[in-house]
Length: 412
Image 1 (tube, helix red, strand yellow):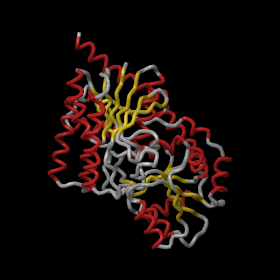
Image 2 (cartoon, rainbow, N blue to C red):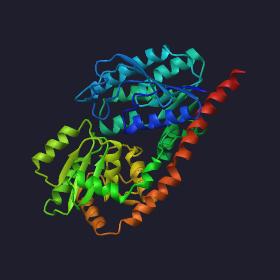
Image 3 (tube, helix red, strand yellow):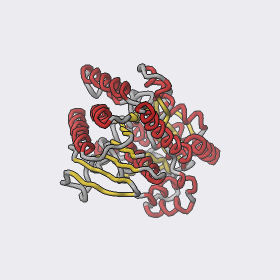
């Protein structure tokens, strides 16, 4: 089976959609399928193209059996709502042009966001007479409405594009049961929507205390109770709650807050921490794999934070990473959201109200005095039960094969 994937994010990006798309594509290639990915040059979460790719218009690469077809996209920095629209539109145009220059695949896997990829998905599907699977990583219209990022007319337009994407797709896939429920509520038949959940990194189950100790030595962290947040530093993460909790704890040197990663809100958050004179907060850039393993092994508690207005169905990939690594979690989120449900269902930590620094600080103080091993064991058990590579990637291959097979049968 020849699979063409349209995705704005791909390797060497290591967070979010880029990581998801990369391991999916490489799994399919390892299983014997011919896989191409039409993408742009890496930019996320720094919103900056690295020097080795800067100034390029197009490029074709091969990695782990996958053909990577890159095309230009406008990368804004700083990011605004309008600039992001231009960014996504430029990629949609670029991906369409690049895909048209490739050989006809058997099936398209289209990763959203950007939602605008629905346009080339529908066009290419008709041109080549093949099905497409629309993979929903984020319900963009819902997120835009929740965060007030776009005017009402723009959100209404997004909802029309969304409806067309679902209507013409052979199959719609998404990350969580809550997201599936929301899609079905939009009028998509239940049997057309499949779960394609995140995959845990199986190697994180064998973290060692030695890796954590080495990380602490490398970054001069001592034996403090280490509270970490890693990944995208964006607006919807609402990281001010961490700074405000740290301010409540500034009189006690036993706890250290570590914010690791980059993103659209990084500079503002770092400026605010400096203005607040938070000596117990430290920032690190994105880490390579050995250092990231060390970070997880060294962390006493990992944080998941979201603004209260973030859609209840949003599900950051860091939740899977933390649980796979057996890390206790405190989630400062809307209690009705998917993240809260997973933390409570797994028993791997605590949930506190979003944007409530006092509640976050109180939960941290409580966990500091607990035996955290009980959370670690429950975290690993839950991750293995739900997100093992064998289960998740097996579902991916079966879904794409079913979509391609159904199309072939209907053509006979």
